[in-house]
Length: 405
Image (tube, rainbow, N blue to C red):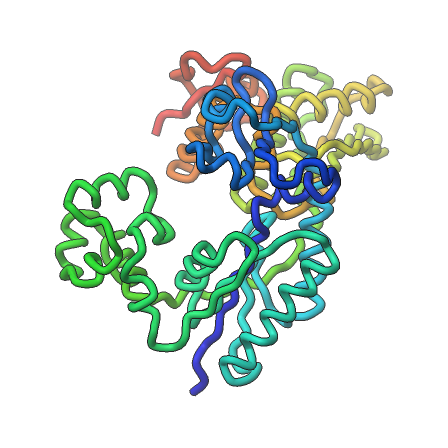
């Protein structure tokens, strides 16, 4: 039985690298990409800024204080998506099966292609092809599984490559910080540091039962990863072109409050699906079917996004432009198309930390209690999702209600 060979590829400081490709004067200078306002957030930062303690997700005001000489750029999500798609197409043409983990991160299963160092040579040539054709720096890690390969990529950066030979996984991981293990967030990291656990080697030597008693059910997974054990499969990349939702009314209506509330609810749920699948949309459309069964639709191109507060006003605007016959409406629908891989980080160019925290909290509630467990208060009474109460405090301009369980 042949050993598996998993390649992890990661575009280095992707947003910054694209800006430098387009503006060569930014080379070797400290660069921040993200929101420009007082509540803006850092979407990406160059290595020159990281020595000052700057990191992605940090408030832009804090980053500017830490690195006053940094050049701040708002960024363009459409441009970044275009370069991500170019790299995706290169990988797709060379590798039979791969996973696109985010807008700038990929896994490929190279098992069975050749003996291990023949695979390493192939991976090296693939990296050179990507750099030559896209002009962007990219790093990779290669090992027998996804976790070790991802950690190896982090150690290879910037703009380099690293292979971990079969049987050397524990030796490679042992001297590294426990914070390098995927799924160890800041809280878990602090808990381990409090126990005196700083290096992965300590985790390797701990009884798995002890980790389970301290970290719960995640303790065993963390222990396995510390020992280089991982059987997470590659999730094959399939570009989904669109998602949509429709509502046929039991009785044809011209109740504007009901119609607009239904549109808002559908848009909100579709946006949640986008974020859950690490997708962004750049084309939205609204559909109307009148009581005489004539059907009309109208679409618009927008910058890539998965944010409710951007999508809902656009959908409502399209509906206003489309509804002009003043007849009873039988059906309305919403569709998002031209989907691209990418997580919500790409919306950091405009959003504040408060907005991002709100979305994370709301999506967490939906994952736990269901998609319709939390919705805008403006949709109450218009979508037949049941009685809701307990409005969230302090979340203007969006007011939400949580349905009692």
